[in-house]
Image (cartoon, rainbow over all chains, first blue to last red; front, side):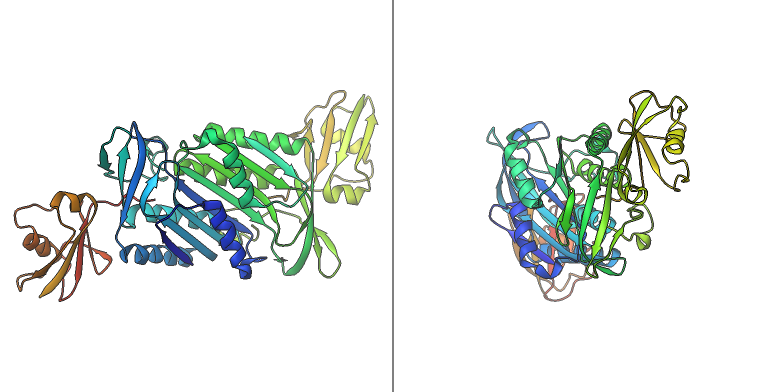
Length: 157
Length: 157
Length: 77
Length: 77
């Protein structure tokens, strides 16, 4: 398990490739890798967004993310999990979060990625403040209702 | 939508990064990307596997994969789908299949990736012949029961 | 009528042939394609069939110039 | 008893403070931490609380040197 809270730009595919290269002990063992990447869109709630500031609660963030991944490891057979989350100022089009799960079987990789992402959205102490092109800023009030809810009401990534 | 049947080694993360770079029209629009990668393991059904030969039915393969992705696009709101499947001789530890889905919302990206992968496993005309380290070869008889089935009986990636 | 027949994977190995052409006015269904092409061999259980690149059942009607394929359960991905 | 209090995100902006230390023998619960720290302000609806980096409810008992945090619903990912 590797958790990283990153202040700089995140290159998701290069990060996964490098991580996999540096963990040669996994090679030949995993049959299924699932990677989820959350990216900042240009638009949100009808407004053009220039950037966000992602605040978090240092210490609690890492603890909570670790608890989430440990819970996933209890539920599914996982070989490794990499979780990287940006904080600070993030420009539109940039990566916000990366979750990579290596497993023997695909069911575990799919289920665990999804579980980790949902738990993160609802319990990891991150807060987004959006900076609009019109110069104003706003705190996001709630996160999306997630994949379990009706798809039509799923307003966020 | 892009479907590729590949005779040469597949570098999954570089492939996704390059595809995304070459599709600048997606940038800023997608909030969620899900990538599934299936990789050849060292071991299967208790034997050390040196390589596989992946046979397919040219023409039907492409048609079937296209039908699967079109069906996914009917079910979920997707911005783009990339599917690359190896054929021919594949060494242990090498990538077999890559499915990348770009969507606005994460629920769509997760659901569609999973759907495409399951449908591919059960209906795309690919066949694996395993070459063991003891010199013998065997055709795989059935694919795994998938993620819907009991996890304990899920014997394949 | 000429019908193209193709075999894949273990079925191809077991039969020792990958493709053949049939010309018979007797053939109406996919099942009959198999019977004419392999008169002494029962169609192996679980064999899948496709006509012109789409899955069909064994009672599917074939017509002139169809491509009929027989193969074992798929194991890709 | 000394208790560290922290605020995040919009709550921090609204209150105009990020952290403070309380010293009061009156405090037994998280709810009382808020009341002593913000005597004239009702705890905003949906506010979440954590003690020593774990979520708690408002009746959770605090002890000396605890770090108590208040913040709005999270919106990461």
